[in-house]
Length: 472
Image 1: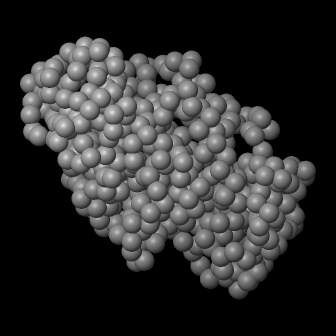
Image 2: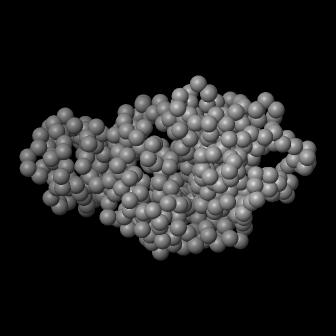
Image 3: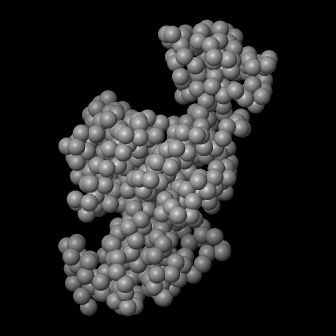
């Protein structure tokens, strides 16, 4: 059973029902809808297909809406323009065609926010410019490397604190669409500060608290503010595409490891994304480097790994997912090599719930428990147990459908829906035991660890550990 969760981006490559069904049956946990592309109608069809699949198969693939985010782009070019190293070029806020002399940019305030010596990157960093002067609405630059520029290419500004709004008007409309369609997660692009997350929470409102917000870390300012962002978000995505443009590429591996560690310490899910099997967009087999990248992300302790263009628009969507599944399952055969969350790394202010979670995992390892059973009303205890990466599967007994979806992003957690009222802890455990035995993976006499809270259904009250023999 795979412990690391997998996110698949849906798109034209899997819109045909038979291909989508093959993808779903191969096994993934969360469907990503990339709102940088596609219309509401296209995304609505994919959401309906997901909901129908979940209903027919008793499954619970969660839905993640990924916003486009605020962005700066170049203007239109009649044809691709060759830019030569050391030549001067002018960026202007006026609408002009891209030539060897001028490039139009979409952000009107950029001349006010850059300074001589700043670097401006075009087309995912393929072309670098250095600012040498500013005159009114024009930024005079020197081309640092030769390249070819087409239309509407992205502009990145490493080390420049651009005053773009945290969410664009398009993002707002997309989020409102997601609320209407009852998506489970919103991934907010180009987060820079904790306040960006709070602005989206305000837009979502208290009536839609079942939607969790994932902060996409893809600029240097977000890395600097990571502690505050983790505090107010429900999880983070290390979006290595733009992040690898915004920061020196050599720093990316260490930043990935650091963010994963920080997220695990506070029990927030973390996703590693972008170019994980990029070559499989075109080829049926991955490169050796891609296999190692996935393996090392899992060994770093990520909760989830993500496929983007591989499943959205690639030639081999099902093969890409199958490959990712196989790599994850192979690495997880030796769970002891996953870096443990040592108790000494936990905060001194950890609560009784955290101590109980740690002890549950510790006892489970020592007695080789078949599984760890975690009744949870908020998902918090399951996340606390999961951050220690136990050898035993984590079975969360949940009473709310949205919790089943939210835990789809948490490493090693499987869920059993228990939507009914209970007379007490013993009744709940008995019902959970019935469901475990029904699954066929467990049998009478198996030893399991149960951690629960008394009274039931109150978040943050986990205070009990029980060693239990199924059917005993």
